[in-house]
Length: 115
Image 1: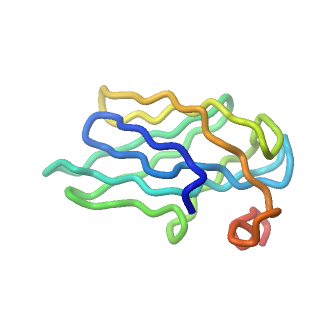
Image 2: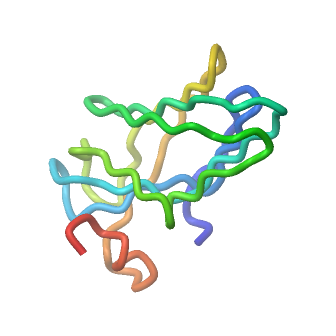
């Protein structure tokens, strides 16, 4: 799945980040992977306009959202749009425009909240 956006927040690499949701105002599941390139555990905070998710990345480890679910309570915009998301790792921050996908592509259907 390569429809997401990439970025970096300090030692954290953000790869193929996207949100899967059925419609605006409904829950949205994050997909993609966070990679910690440092020798220390890093706490990462992911925020949109009204939700915050925190994850811990082990030293030299990764956090794949396909196997470790993280869901925003509501998504601000419809599938097909871009949503502003902030990814903070310590004092570093990446502001990204993250695509919102729906179940039109079969590979995303299993990740729709409620499935």
